[in-house]
Length: 251
Image (cartoon, rainbow, N blue to C red; front, side, top):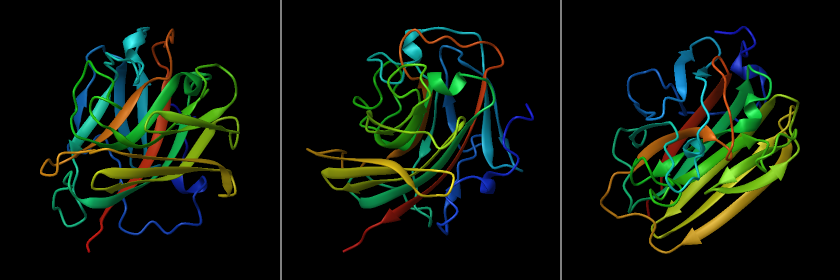
């Protein structure tokens, strides 16, 4: 992999939060199911030194790579969601999903053309908009938030994007939560600058019967284009570090 990937994940923002009992997203640990029907991904591997998932792309251009396309076939990794004790996260539970993320790029401009999102959903269906059809709820990030090539970044909640100035020319860090309370949810996310301070935030509440109570939910990492007309070349690369934790609320 390219040496332009970060050497140490702890040298980036989010220094002020003690991440006790958080799980690190390792897409190569055998627990994730991978789906990429259009062949956007050339390779992916977890770097044990940096804690980043390093992703390389193929030469490709297809509007169905956009995550929010109504017939989206963007790549995704998924697994059944569980609490720390191994018990299932059910649709009828009251719980909080806390997420931290750091996004890096190894290829000039690639961050301006992709989105990363981690959250929960009731299904992992391809060929639909996962944010609506699969009831995805979570937080994410993208560069070039307005489907542009400008040096700006965005925080994503349930498909809603809030702009904020990037911490530097090539990194985005976030701290977010998806709080699910039966038939309603509140998602919030904060962008962090190089000092770990608030660099922009957004929140979104919604209700109306989110999940079927008895269904075990999926944890899904979505990766794809942040708009239409995006093109990618062989060797384009990005790296992302996610940590997450499910907390069940009882009583």
